Image 1: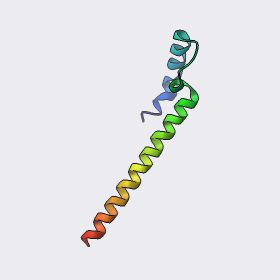
Image 2: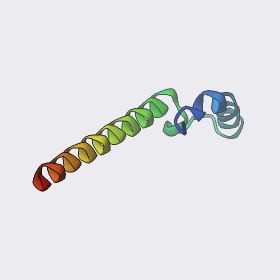
Image 3: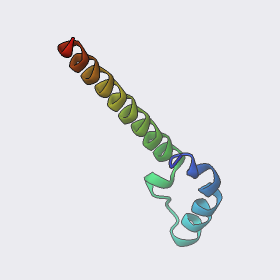
Image 4: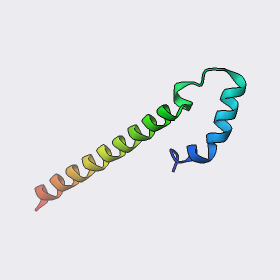
Length: 63
């Protein structure tokens, strides 16, 4: 749920970035947010794959 908080925080973040500095930092830009979301998705998928493969190998050893 945390990456999707960007959708309702976007107007606030854009307004603050425009008011404080002329150049928006990368992590507040659309590309930065997309890259962050992609990294979170890849990390969660890798964690899921690791969990599934480690639990399957553990169960097969106990049989």
